[in-house]
Amino acid sequence: MTDQLPPAVDPFDPPLAEITAQDFPEPRKPRKLIGLVAALGAVLCAGAVVLLVQLWPSGGATPAPTPAATAWAELPALPGTAEQTLRATDGGPQTRVEFVNETAQNVTIAWLGYDGERSVYATLAAGEKYTQDTFVGHVWIAAGPGGDALAVFQPTAQPARAVIRPAG
Image (cartoon, rainbow, N blue to C red; front, side):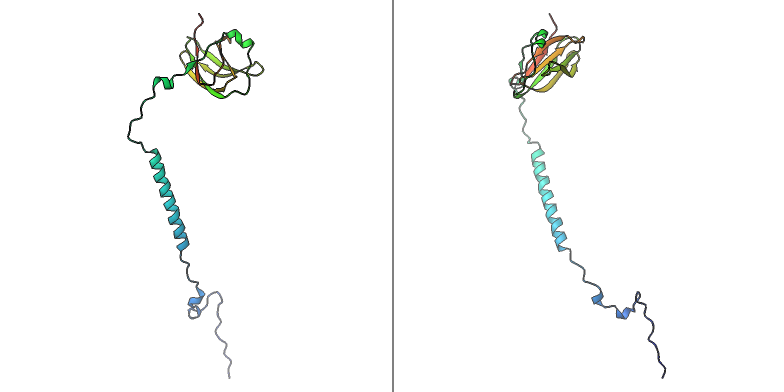
């Protein structure tokens, strides 16, 4: 009797007959992922519709604002010498000032601090305007090219215009 050895089997390359369907798991069905993508798509579409409704022109003409609605009262211009006695104070409501340079020269707009020091915010050429958010209790200086105060302005609770006019 001769002993025959079974043929050698490579564990990394098994014979095809030994591979069964149990060796391969059944693929998952992507139902949950498809449902999530569909829900996300629906939310994005709804958001797009809301955005379009909000941004789409209404078709009706918007009436132009009346001059009274856009006109701001004019702040009284204090003399430049008032800078020596005034200082900014805290506690007032927020407001807005539109500075208008009606002189033929450059004008520097500066905030007068609590310590009496100027902080420059803008330089206006002749005919230019500048709008500044500020507070009631603040003091603003309009100075000529040499630094001399041309006018001093104290904002009010209502937005107002500070018109810088030529001396004289």
